[in-house]
Image (cartoon, rainbow, N blue to C red; front, side):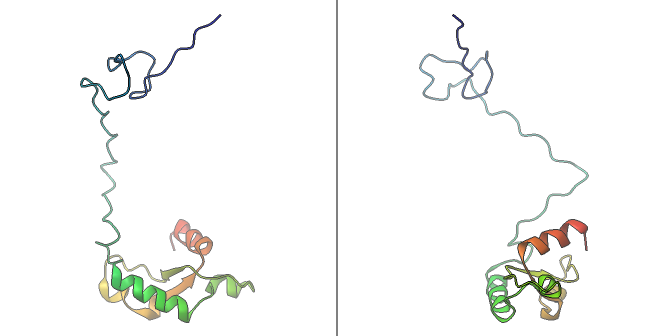
Length: 121
């Protein structure tokens, strides 16, 4: 009969220094593993609120989607698909004037927006 070897629920190894008798609490010797370092060549991206996507943007986005409820790319292909994303046609790259220029906006469905973003347009 083979015995089952259980893994430590804290470090996920068969043998470790953090095993304790009751295994109900984190032992005092256990420390959280260090996170993997981020790629230093790639700068950390600011959160959405810091990039301008705040309450004012969410209101403007909903207003625009009510005015333009269909995806413009799907509509050009002859399909009727509801839009869920307001996309900047020309990426604003932090320029607030371009960010708030509604003539630079287009309504897209999630699929078309992901496709556009992946191609880098």
